[in-house]
Structures are given as structure tokens and as C-alpha cells.
Image (cartoon, rainbow, N blue to C red; front, side):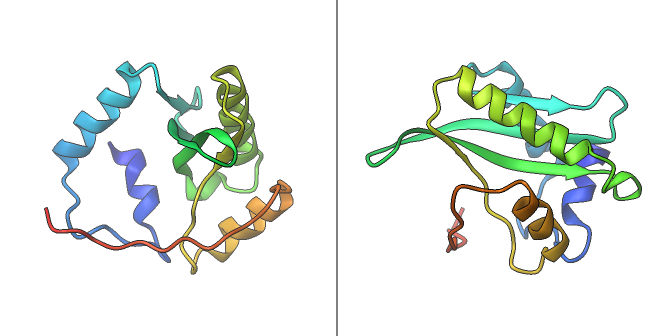
Length: 132
């Protein structure tokens, strides 16, 4: 899963409980699920995981981009946009009312990309590591 290393490049970092073997099993589970997909470019220069998430009381079925990464040497070449567009199309095909993702505060380049893609709204996410 060398592509996943792109997720940990600065300004990001490896989660404390990261286990490559467990991650590989999770990816296989996403591939096999009818509630998720793993989008990968033909040349392996980028990938995106999309999951049908919780049904929102306010908005209906939500889809969530959990991972979106492009080879650092290939960024700003349209790959991220193509993957995000494919994620949106998958979400629509699976009756989602909207697509969401969260991004770390320090990922300013990614935020500029997301802003160019004209999100319907932005929000702030809060998260806690849980024992386990």
C-alpha cells in the first residue's frame, strides 16, 4: 500500500495506531462493500475512497470521502479533480444527497484545491482518539 504513504506526507502524519496489515484488510473490505468504493487512477498516480456514511436527519444519505491523495510529483495536473468528480458521480449513483470530507487544518494546499471545487458549504470537524 505504498500509495497510502502520500496521506502521511507533511503537513500530515501517520496516525499513532497505523498498521499497514490492518489498513490493507480495510481497503479490501471497502472494495468488497456495496456501500463503498476505491477509485484509483489507471497509472496509480492517485486514489480516493468513498463511503456511504450515516443518513443525516437534516440532509438524507451522506457520502464521505475518507481518503483522497495524489502523487506529490503529479499534483495540480487535474488528477485530484478527476477523482473528486468521480466520487461525486458515485455518490449520486448511490442516492447520496451530498458528499463530505474533512481535512487537517495544516493542509493549506489541499484546502485551496477544495475551495476551487466550490463546496456547497464548509465546516469545522472535531475528533477524538478513542481507546482501542
